[in-house]
Length: 390
Image (cartoon, rainbow, N blue to C red):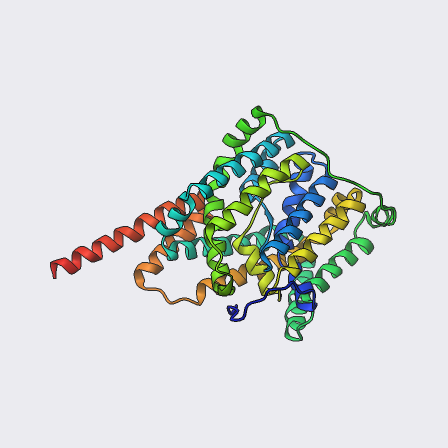
């Protein structure tokens, strides 16, 4: 169970806890980055370098394990519909502009005041369930008995190493790389690419107005509801839970979200956000400062600058059950934050409505956000009328 910090941290640290926590969000990020790179034929070097750079800058700015993640709704649409890179980059600019308007006009803060805390907790619970199901269904189960065995080994290793305050996530990731380099069918070719580094730089890309308009309709509109609920409101709530001394505001989180998406597409980088699950994941594995995010970003920077050619190959060879276990720990960390609070019958009803809408309906996070808020205020009004009759 996660406990909030009580002392302020003003400096970055790079100790073993930060190294361990650095990879607490990799189970979410890597599959999405790989899927978009393949589906939209993105430049792998640019994708990795820009993603890593955003991590490093965020760690330095926030001085806490504030995550940077690919935009999930956008990534899902790009992968499933095989949308082009131009539309993806245009969607990034569009969602960045939307979030900038919401942040600068104060609408984002008004939404934060309007949406009840229990609805935000419901969004967190929905995300925890979604991540847990994804880990079990898509990452662990398809590999059959061997996948379950590898997942169990990883799970036991993480628990054992965490008890000794050792870098558990780093060890299981090394286990996965070792598997890819020795057991996977393409291991020999992978070794050749890994031993032949070459310098790469991000490629300049200027989205057209047509790209931005198409990206706005196809990608930004489906994404913005999830972003408001999970990337902004839920992330601010978890930051308040774990780092109360930081006193983060939704406006600040919204502005950095916006700035990232107004810069990344011009450097051929994927659209990104902050995220409640990522913050919980980094924290669950030991991260307490921005040093963990700097380390994590440096991993992508080095990979993109020198080893981009083996990116797709390594991902195809990397055992998915290990990523699934890391993702499962992220889900448990999120669930732990929801579980630490006591709820009335009304709150439990709202929590369930939001969570199950989030995982079971199209645009579920938007539906859950609106429906949960409406039900909460309906209950509140009914209770007030009942008191008046007494």
